[in-house]
Image (cartoon, rainbow, N blue to C red; front, side, top):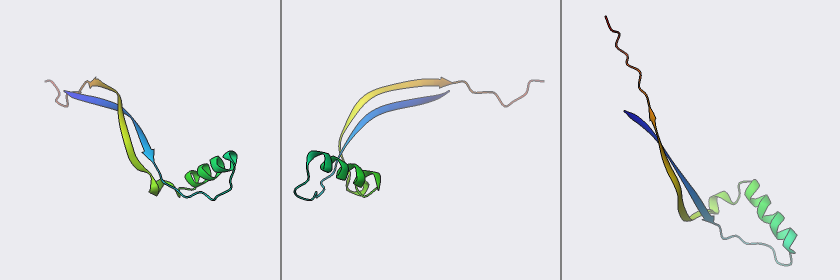
Length: 69
């Protein structure tokens, strides 16, 4: 019997980045989003916490490959 198991986790990552001084809240948000969208922040991301959300299983019916005579 084959079973497909699906595990759903919520992964919280943390990045420590330098942001130029003197930016307002909107400019800080834009700076962070731009770094994320360009992929610059991905290498800085470390898994900080993983929360288990759910697990489910589905039984897969196997088809017999032998023919009856």
